[in-house]
Length: 264
Figure 1 (cartoon, rainbow, N blue to C red):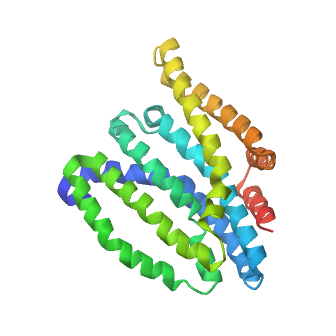
Figure 2 (cartoon, rainbow, N blue to C red; figure 1 turned 90 degrees about the vertical axis):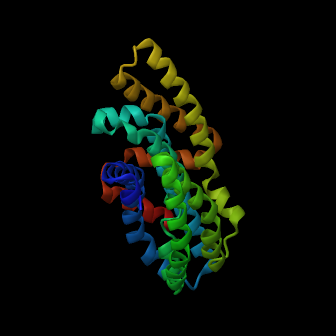
Figure 3 (cartoon, rainbow, N blue to C red; figure 1 turned 135 degrees about the horizontal axis):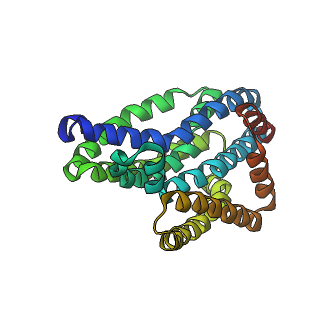
């Protein structure tokens, strides 16, 4: 739809923006799925353990992806100019708009593992079939307002429909929406503090450095990490310990091991 109406160049920009925001999600999903599916399968007859492991995994995922995606949105211009080059700069607003969608998608990454563990993979298939028609509709409507319109339409649809499929999945293992929200609340509030501090730092650094993109990007990210860590420490000491462990991980292997420990 995008390629036919807006052209191949617009499609390339949108596809790359979508790839960039989904990269942390897909990488993490691959690691987590390998660990949680066997764990969940072994817990299917122990609902309290299944529920506890699921909520811990959700908390763990949000702890990683929320600050990454928020930082990416905050410093989208600098990231694109440094990593991809000036020719991709029109991707910046699209990337920012897609970031909230990717955050929700990240905490829904283990939905498939849960549905398979309880023997209901058909739910996801049926949901995808139902979701297809409104997806086509909003994408077509969004193209009337260029790529920003497409990004807004896609993100809005995902945000509106996410609670439905998530609630269906949660009910199968006795998790309320309130418990689900509580599991990611610490990461969310810390991310908000990080966004406020990061936005202020971005403006301040831009003024004192004559918009030196390297300085703004490096010091801005450093400030974001520090503020996020402090906010996590104030909100939840146990979550802060997990955050420190994440920063100490040097490979996918160690990350997977930490995830397994949390699920166990």
